[in-house]
Image 1 (tube, helix red, strand yellow):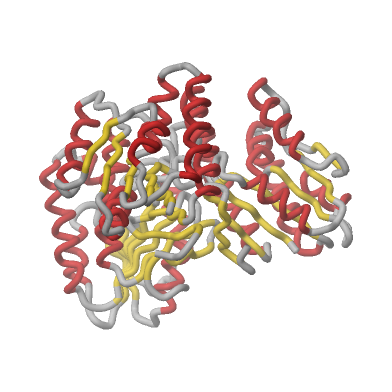
Image 2: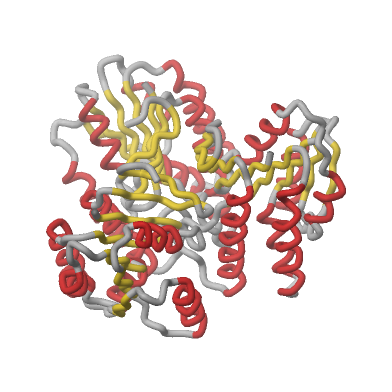
Length: 173
Length: 173
Length: 173
């Protein structure tokens, strides 16, 4: 099953995704997309890490997400990707539109055939005023399109608000 | 029936509204409120245009929305207004508060008596931090009040997230 | 019963909370957390005030929310706190992290034992792009964590969109 967990900042989306991964009863591989760039980000990453079970495998990959999913997906494993927001940001920072399109299409094309459980976490950032700045607007556009395309391919889509799940597609949590 | 389709940036709200218009089985008039000001906006408009059936009628009106609705609403026609966000922005840019109030009240007053199907599309922008700048804050306020007033008058209100409809009022989609 | 009413700017959250307070049939104490700092804020406060029944008691407290709740909660009274957003902002502006933690923990710890009806109103601001600025990011983080912790303790949690309630927890409105 493919699941997409959307949510705002500090809305409990990672926590929910981790709970779903644990509930799957499968061995879990945690796929981290973050580039530990600054102190604040390092702190957030450390915080996430202490919350995760020590037996989970860890793969760090900021860009080649489709390849990592293909290499790790098996019918008896749960992959948890946290998060698509940072992956998209990493791709946008490359300033190489062809690479972005290639990575995105590769992800969307390969998804339906992947075995096992895959859970994606992503920030919903489209419900506020879009700040000035071309990169920010491009990010909001790319994230919106990606979420639509992923939601189409996922069997369950959830929006978390204040730590509570609002099921948008599939069996309610 | 009056319907209001709210959604964030790139959330699939226009696409859903277009589907609802097609599903109505009525001839459709598309009411565009955009002023094609810059290259980026022109591109978005062109993108929307290629998606619409060629047989749909088109009316372009940036300000006098109530008048256009009154002129075009008939019991056997579906009007699709895309989008209220730009209409409000156009009115705010006039810097003529009386005109804004007059256009808004005219819209709200005339709506309940209009025949046929009318579908409104608007951006939900109130769920983020409100950026600095008096105009932005006024926009967020005006949009919030308008959405509340419209939602009261509409038989169905939907919020789109990741292309998926979340029905807030009326029969679920 | 503890209730949390979340919503965006101008989404009708205060109006819904006031309706729930009236519907409780209990005498109501309105707990205002705002510091009337500038003209725009004063105007909003005056607007809220004219909408409230004259028989409601009023307590103004920008910081010591837990203390005020403990002093005023009784089994035959409804307390309406509007809003947590301003309370958090007031605490952040003190630039005294220990005080913020103390006030927050005091609120969360005392809540479950408080008698009567308590309704909290708060802005949901986490669903847009988080603007630059460390204080804004800290606000979004603190608000998100607070909402999660409160939602866990409340029997009903509602998100208002366009004046319409979307029940996230508890009996649907």
